[in-house]
Image (tube, rainbow, N blue to C red; front, side, top):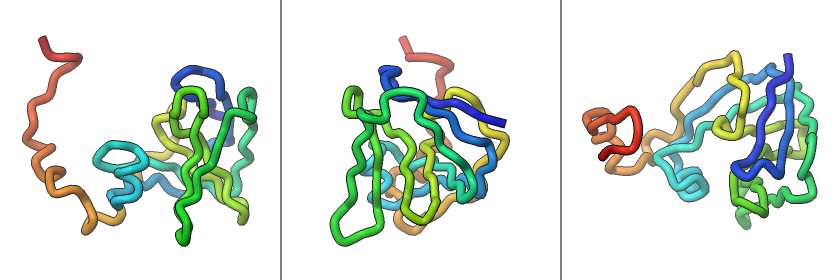
Length: 132
């Protein structure tokens, strides 16, 4: 089954086969900086084929020097989009998907590196939309 995704502005669109190996919620400082959130939510696939429907020319990859960390994004809106790694690994930001994958998150990783304020999230007020 194919699932689809896009960036925030819609300039980049893709589809990918829904055969992910893992779905990690990464709490490392690099993922926090790259997303601006408590953790990154990324799906990993070693056998999937990524098809760029449109906007592949707008995708830029940032490789953090002297590391294996890479983040791909739309140069129009800055949204994270899939990253293709040399050894046939595709990393898909879960938030870029327009169709839900069949896999649920499989693990939280780099928990020892999580933000100190993250422990308070479970007890934080919740609203169905923007509070008044």
